[in-house]
Amino acid sequence: MREATSKKVGWSILAIFTALTFLAPLYIAFINSFKTQKGIYSNVIGLPGKDTFTLNNYFQAFKDLNFLHSFMNSLLITVVSTVIIVIFASMAAWMLVRSKTKISKFLFFLFAGAMLIPFQSVMLPLINLMGKLNLLNPAGLVFMYLGFGSSLSIIMYHGFIKNIPVELEEAATIDGCNKFQIFWLIVFPLLKPITVTVSILNAMWIWNDFLLPQLVINRPKWHTLPLKMFYFFGQYSKQWNLALAGLVLGMIPIIIFYLFAQKHIVKGVTQGSIK
Image 1 (cartoon, rainbow, N blue to C red):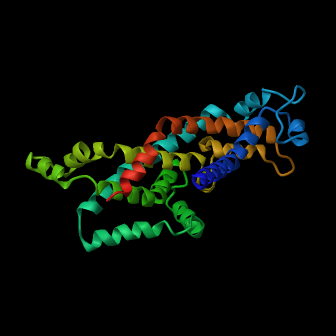
Image 2 (cartoon, rainbow, N blue to C red; image 1 turned 90 degrees about the horizontal axis):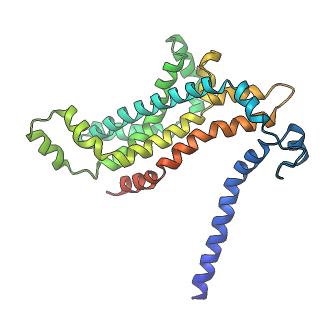
Image 3 (cartoon, one colour; image 1 turned 180 degrees about the horizontal axis):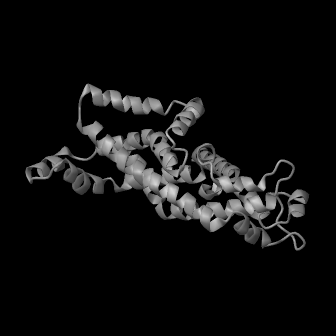
């Protein structure tokens, strides 16, 4: 009994330490977003005092980031990319599951193997190719997100679709449904848990991505929020107070999205892992 209690206490301490480790950067970013530049340099981890507390960081960051325009750019690219990934990945996974051939198995392992290829190894050739095709713009960025996001999404859908009885599709075929109707009217509605999971994971990745948009988007009017954040880091000075305020502003939408949909993540992953 004492041994079991000791183990619980040990795991609880470990869990608290791990949580604090992950939350510490968020805490530091949040409290310092309310400080002046001098207040940040004088005490990084302390709460803002009377002489260092200010709300002007948020107003100035909102203005300097051209927040509404940048927010709409990020939102448009994130939503369009996520929707396209969900559509193509779900259809591809369904066909790979139902087509029990050597080619379908090969394609599945090809998608799985693609996850092992680092983005940095294909970065420069890809950008060179997209430049020749005149796709260094938001449309080309969405296309590249589809390519990089499909592998994990297909694997997740693949495991989930295996649990859907094929008899449902056979019954729909007898009723006169074609392939398109079977998928969108029968199969896709049953994929809601894993679809939400895939959407959350891709949306968080795309919303926070900096490297790929920096390589692809070459006009200020197309800049997303992560790209605009770079405005606060000059060659000789860094405006940490404004940068942290802008960072908090940029985190709010994706955190709200996550909180509303988080319950589906574990459900989607666990159901997709059961065969």
